[in-house]
Image 1 (cartoon, rainbow, N blue to C red):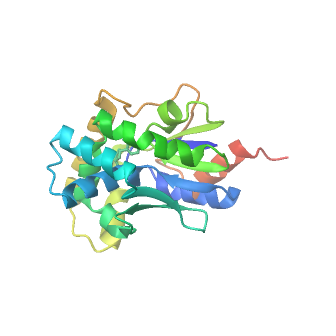
Image 2: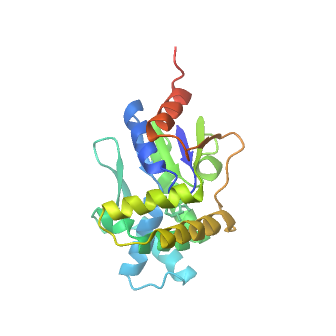
Length: 223
Ligand code: DC
């Protein structure tokens, strides 16, 4: 089992996807679960600031299967909301912020814990998130804390959104990155922390290929 944690925009998704492909492991993007809870709540007319109401949505949606993880047959997993893959609708800045808000709610985290553990149990899996190595799978064999400077992360997020045709400003993207960092690192429950036994990789000045190679070598040491 490979746990890849780190702040927003460090390149976790790209790296985790490539590592899973190279190893032939299943990939679980746990951030999409938090995004899906925010989407579910908004669809049901719930204010994301209303903790109890959002927690109730999470418990109900996980319980009745309207929010679930499904293998997509190609080695990745998809989160399904009301039976469908929301695709790019999960990736908007609004849902990035919404996911950050709902991920601070203990009831939401508890509701998603079992779903994540169920997928990781059989091993041969790469999970990427914020608390995989610290909370979800503290016994993961390989833990990576992937980080990069806030400026580098903002630039990447900006390029990514622009490439997708989303109109954003770099300064606003940097602010969003810093706001999410503060929120993700300072929340009372499962804050973003580096596990003591994690391998820290600073990707500020590394090409994705170098990061991917380094992680694959941790799992399968050469020779
Ligand atoms: O990785 P991402 O941007 O899709 O994550 C969206 C939000 O979900 C982010 O603000 C932090 C939160 N999250 C979390 O609290 N725990 C995880 N394991 C994954 C994501």
